[in-house]
Length: 86
Image 1 (tube, rainbow, N blue to C red):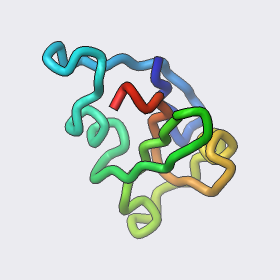
Image 2: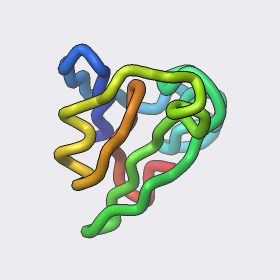
Image 3: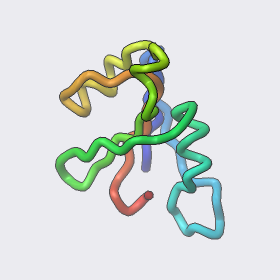
Image 4: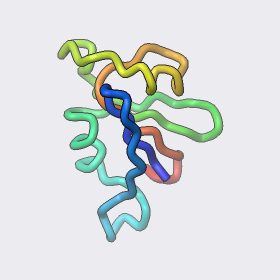
């Protein structure tokens, strides 16, 4: 199950809403969660962190929890999911 990691430190388990995609998130769903265009940060063990592509340019707040998962500095709300969920 995917995790929506917000800049306030909260983590919420999320599932795809699209019935047609069969357990895969749509582009629109991911964009809504991160607040704009998406960029994928590939992590070990077939995990992907979806982030706002323009987060640094927009000056989004640091996301400390997501940064720990990714072992790099991330900003804005992020979605951590498995490769097959996208």
